[in-house]
Amino acid sequence: MRNEPGRGTVELLRMPADSMGKHGYYQPGGVMAALAQAREADILRVAREDADRALSLITEPGASKYELIRALAYLVQSTRAAVDVAECRQERLDARD
Image (cartoon, rainbow, N blue to C red):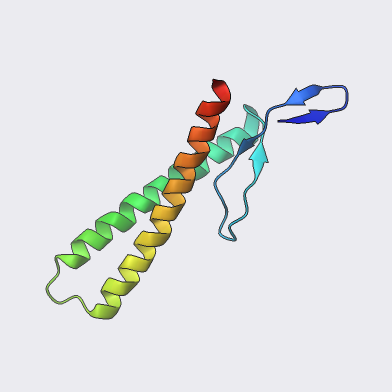
């Protein structure tokens, strides 16, 4: 939350980090909230896809060590992003209490 002159206290919600690891903030409702929700949905979709790719690769007998390491690196990155989404959502739930 922050104070704005003439408007009182404004609740700001955290968006998931961008590719540079920086977080943005937005007010509930409106265009920015919709963009934040779309970003969260995209992050979770990519995490599911990366998990599916990794699973199919580890069951592939001809997969190389390089392919497995690369799949693991993508999976780690997606997992961290999905955890960030979960943390943002938890912060929103905590703010409602």
